[in-house]
Length: 408
Ligand code: PMP
Ligand code: GLU
Image: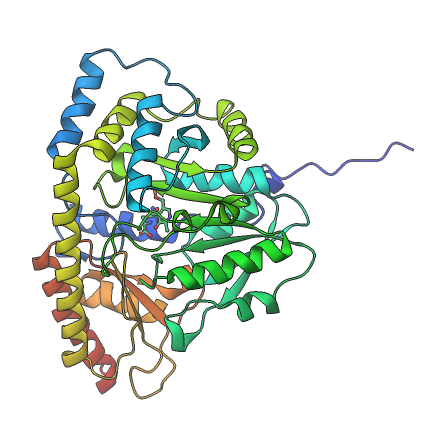
């Protein structure tokens, strides 16, 4: 008897776990409300409010005028890879960085996708410290592996320790996706913490994908600690994600990169040769200027100083105007992650409820912790103008007061 096959659903099982990005969705909703004339302060998305520095924009325009409008080299132009190698080498005290081990992509989101898709597959488990940026579990699912969320320690800026990782380690664990400086918490792993995690990974043969796109937005001195600051042996099973979006105010140009051992870089390049054929060509020339031009470096220093000032003011305002509200002390990136489950008489407020009311009644868009795996929390992005941040905090404090007094 012929077996009757069930018609497949219209959508492939590739998308079995797929949800759209909440950060992108909330940002789109805030923009929609604003286009309707509503007074909405958008502190949801992690996107610098600064314009792309002029020398970068000029390099992009010149690239178009000079005819760099054909297919780019799939792995990225030699100039861009060299500029990144020199730049990252300087950030790490002159260590050797090989330009041929980079694959340049359409934003570091694609670099992360390339890395996960290249390294992981069915039956593999990939550890992700939680709370985690929205796209990590999704990207791991798309590679058909299983994301395993490892809760960070509340006493320790929600970071994970080797002990936490050991508790989830078995033979099926093939990877760890680490983010430092961290989105959504702003926590930063110290060099000795990175080394300890690197030792754990080496012991168990686990790949580390180290997302370092916020490395320059660091409130200690210099750049945040990186796997590039460790010996070569720590790079043997590590893919380092870097990009131009955040520190260079280039989110729309879509340039990111992955630095990997040669065989992995080659595999990622092959994968990419069938998807995007390389990142936007003029944008690559603009990014090469970003990493190489000393005038741009001055702008990066200024932008980071502005983020630091905003962080200081935000922290100060939360401490004095919302003294009972717990938050993670931000040491990098541009997010404040605060806890709402203690707000109000009932003590069971969720981030989702808080954000709904804050947007609906007070006109401020933030991202509920649910998007990052823990709805006791809420994320505020201070990559926004001082005026918007101040207005936003005024309204957040009012919203806390509403919940405290049981109004509405
Ligand atoms: N990693 C993290 C932690 C992020 O917050 C973002 C933000 N978009 C990305 C990667 C991707 O950035 P992009 O694709 O713009 O380089
Ligand atoms: N990474 C930023 C954020 O978390 C940009 C949006 C996104 O790509 O998710 O808000």
